[in-house]
Amino acid sequence: MDTRQMRYFVALAETLHFGRAAERMHMTQPPFSRQIANLERELGVRLVDRDSRHVRLTQAGERFLEDSRAVLARFESACRDARLVAEGQKGELRLGFMMHAAHRIVPRIVSSYSRLRPDVRVVLSETTPADIERRLLHGELDAAVTFAGRPFPQLQAVPILTDRLCLIAPPEHPLAARDRISPGDLEGEDLIAAPAAVAAILRAAITRYLEAGGVVPRFRFEPQLQQTILRLVAAGLGVALVPGSICDDGMPDLVSRPLASAPSLEVVLAVPHGSINPAVAPLVDLVRREGAAPR
View 1: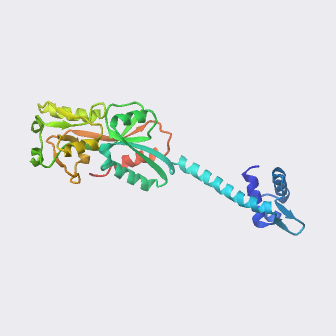
View 2 (view 1 turned 180 degrees about the vertical axis):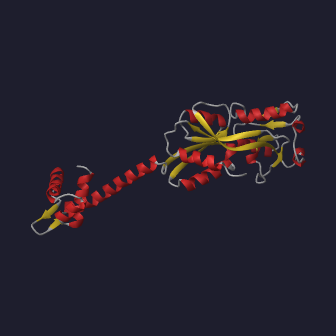
View 3 (view 1 turned 135 degrees about the horizontal axis):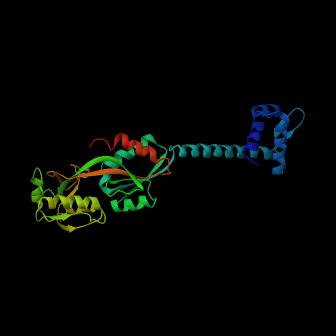
């Protein structure tokens, strides 16, 4: 038995006439009648009672009609979903992002993508830049927002925006009163930053900036998570140089200040070459077209 036989039976049940049902299925009546007879034989039950003038469903036929309609509806839905997934209109997209991007960049990208592909389920995974590289290379993520860094032949990088470092400090800190911070202003300051093993690009940018100004950085705390860095700074345990995309007036208990000749960091969408997930291409096109929108 297959879905064709179910469709034949549904046509007969809805018309209660072999000739009209055969016509609906673009068949002549004799082969149509044989299909119904074959279906009853395979099921081992009579689905219709017929005489020279009337056709009516048996109780078994009424139940088979109900179930056949449900099966055919599910089959049509499965076919439609398969086409939509193949077109990138439906399915799942696993998007990783570093915590610096959670403040502004990711919400804008996800919002635009969700309008473009409302039936694609976006699975967000907030993690560290080092973990992003590993998960992309192992196929655990479909795409990720991260810093542009060492090139991998397996990955392509689509530019999103250029970020610049800024200083964050508690409001009562002497540097909070400055209009602009230079490397020399950070001489002897306790710094809080993620270790190089977690955020190599960011750590290198901080170190180069200070050393270029003749300052030997003194890293007091090295938590992995950006949110922890913010909390430690707010607690008065040091200051931090962080991407400008998280520096705004909405940070409680913190003040942000621009840096003189602030180092820049390129933020990109990293995607494996030859991704087989059709939901990825619309995301890449979106980022190429819009980036993360003006800051």
